Image (tube, rainbow, N blue to C red; front, side, top):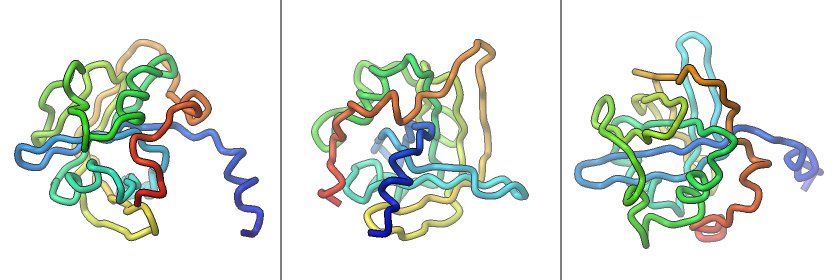
Length: 163
């Protein structure tokens, strides 16, 4: 390439758990590619790997939930990032509840928002889901977001090559 790998290796962005619900199907995964992408109106873009079950469920979902984890929540991040929903129910044994618009909200997440999917963007082995935030909550206890450097050792449930 053009040296972009060295640039990317310097990044240490927040990681998110994105959950999707469509009919009786629930899915969730650890996501590293996500960001606010507009100020007015506020928009947030989440990129999901086409190899993931979460992507397949999200394609039929009207809303997605985006959760920030605390940097100490490695086990929860590993649970959603290190397993595939094709083989395990990621919500089994995890405290969660139904949130706005029928979304699945993780009780342990110190911050979350729910957004309506307003567009999808093809991006190679990932598809971007453009979200219009509809509801959000941020806990009052001090915390710092779980970052890529904290999750470096998590082995993906679906490797990128599966996309």
